[in-house]
Length: 462
Image (tube, rainbow, N blue to C red; front, side, top):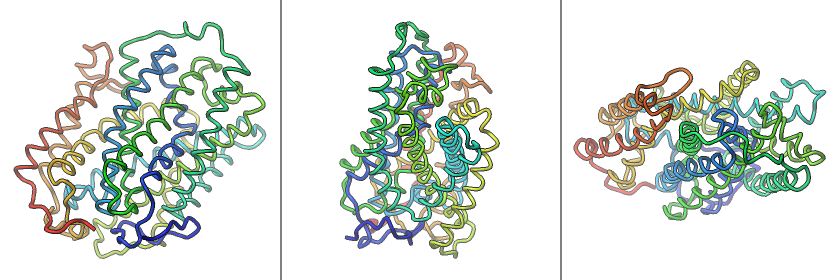
């Protein structure tokens, strides 16, 4: 088994990782998800509970916890796919949708990565601006982007090592923030009476928490594909589950608190105001954490982009140079979006994550049902890279039909600023679309896949 080399430029891209180059343990899955989640974007997401959905603090905590604990089940179930198959998540998606059928899903996921990249760049720059007020905010935004792309160029091992450092640094900064706000600065006397419970707001924040976890589903195999083949599904699941839930819930609770007590509900400015002399190291650590998480977004976006291009150029063998060039190109695009959208960030971000919910839910349902219930992890990995798709073909019509159905079936239950479905309107603005999507598509795809899916491979995946 190989050893981790964080100081070396990664040589692999989308192709299967050989067994003799696998390394790491399930504990690395806890740190990559815990350390990478403690950042400003997670804090801002938690602030939606009290600023956008107007929940009181107790209701905010409950909705954040429920959403993340439920959503992480789907996220963590993807963890076993990387060690089993040794390929990125979007390459494995060809096993359900076919080589050409997977194009739509891959393209949507690339948009997601670029969106999160831009969101993180904005928040990283704006956070640093609160402690460096005399430095141009756009310059700080650009600096976050540069740090992110450098980490991405070195690749998988450096990102894992970065997350281990963030587990202690960001975890310590988060603890210091809570202690300082409660025991040093102090909280307002009427905190428990600020805002109130509403069913629509409560359910909407549950959806946001669930989506936060489900949105990581396309990432998971990208960071487990180097794991030894015998890592085990159960340890991989629980390490990913608790790393991501704890790393998300705690900073989201901080965000909900800041949304209540900060001036104008601004969690970024409130963090600086409520931590006093400790603000500089706290904000600096959270901003550095954003760069690490951005490297994760960018790295996965690069692998997905290479997967997309490979679909149309199957003879192209992408190497480290292609990965570096793609990373720089995506960073330029993300930076451009960040500079354009920085002025109206919160509204743009809220609409963005709600849109993600509707398109990622049917994909994760199809992918997990196929892996665990239909094929039991048995895939012909070589077929993923054949132009005709091997036994999976170019288009898998049942999967594509279920994916489209999964999006359409959610529409009546959708509640956004752009559109409210009739059922959501009847429910008083309660959005349960993601629950309906999973509940309907999982059994429908299972029945269709058992009837029409190709025969499994004759040999286990390497």
